[in-house]
Image (cartoon, rainbow, N blue to C red; front, side, top):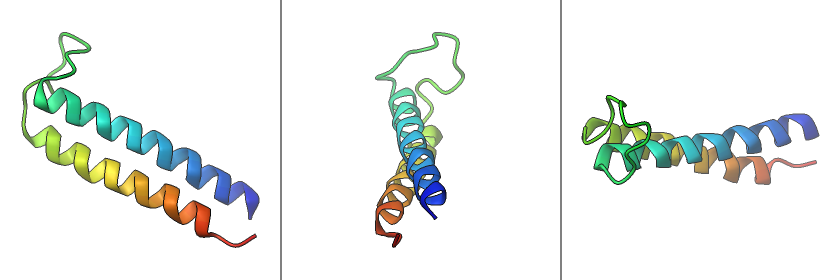
Length: 67
């Protein structure tokens, strides 16, 4: 069960970070890479919010799994 708990935590953290990147690109705050089709595109703000929320939930539930 420890492996599942650790894997869920890692996936949750990565999902949160990618979601934050998508939010940054969608709002135009993050302009990396410069040729990205996601820059200044508002749908990516919502996609990023959903992914970040899912990542936070995964991280939270990974901490709640009993040993």
